[in-house]
Amino acid sequence: MANQIVNDIKLKISGGNAVTRLIMVNVAVFLVISIVKILSFFTGGMPGYPSVEDFFNSFITLPVSPQGFFYKPWTLITYMFVHFELMHIFWNMITLFWFGQILTSFTDSKKIIPLYLMGGIAGGLVTFLFNLFPFFSMYIGGHLLGASAGVTAIIIAAATLVPNYKLSLMFIGEVKLIYVAIFVLFLDILGVASYNNVGGNIAHLGGALMGFVFIWQYKKGRDLSKGINSFLRWASGLLSFSPKGKMTVAYKRTVSDEEYNYKKNVTQQEIDSILDKISKSGYESLSKNEKEILFKASKNK
Image 1: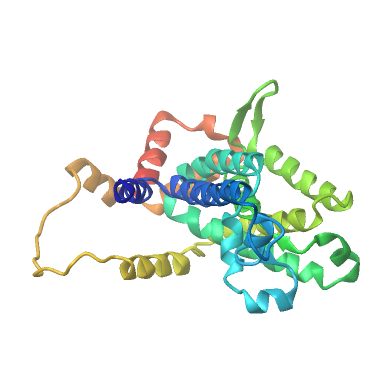
Image 2: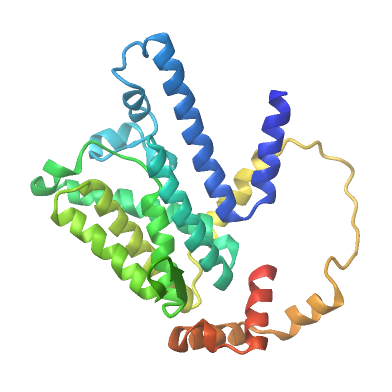
């Protein structure tokens, strides 16, 4: 039974898109932490640790002091998948889903996981930098956790790529994506200025900076996700335990004639031209044919 559940989870992760995979990993970690909390409650606690949070802080959340990070460098990655509170993970995952889908629609799904990781790493490093100043170190706290820096990177990346894309918000109506991004940044800066979750808000700003740089370079033809994608493919190969059979070579076209001709004829210049038009006049200014080209491009990348 347990093996079947594990296999089902593996199938969902491998079959889903990048946004779905990130959400599932975050939720899985949250469920493990929650189960440990329940077990700890019924067994009287964890020996040597005042709370479950302290236990996980010791291993997978990010210590913001350089000396703490020196002994736990892996936490620069693991911290961005850790949540202790239900509402914390709920809002992070909802936001990741909304803006991850938008960014995927105008680039491709292979950008999402690298950008999330780079945003989280940037958030951690920027927090380290600010923690070197005594004024900020008083308020930053001991550890960072949560997906917010990576999610903020995705929000700002989407707003940088298609600033005039309109979101329909409840009780407000249609709002351009650029204004949503500005509001997010305003809240983070206000949080720092109000001494409210200073470390977390500084990490958000570090993620925002990475999101902007990522798309700025993308528009110049530089794909910052290549290195991480190459590493993930290599790591995936190491984790694959399927037996090696006799090598066979099959020559077969895996796409339809329509898809083959589309990939042959539609150039990157056309895609860039459509994105420029969205940036200047909004998504609704596109013709039906342009929307179809953009949709097919996002599916075929």
